[in-house]
Image 1 (cartoon, rainbow, N blue to C red):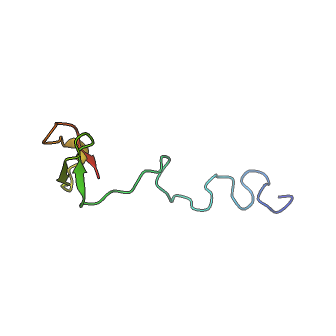
Image 2 (image 1 turned 60 degrees about the horizontal axis):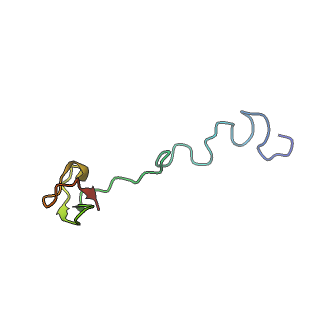
Image 3 (image 1 turned 60 degrees about the vertical axis):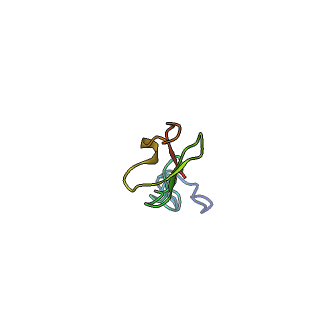
Length: 75
């Protein structure tokens, strides 16, 4: 490390050369997805706007809208 700034040979210096940054192992993955939405909330139809209560353990995308038959999404 000629300047003491972590730019020396790989495997030496502050960063260790492993590409982990400051918070190794912390985060939501490569795409930055959201955390689980939890048990509450509603399922909503993207086509007609019909809302139904979300049931824990059953994804909204597995339900179809009772009005128009389109697959529901989570609100």
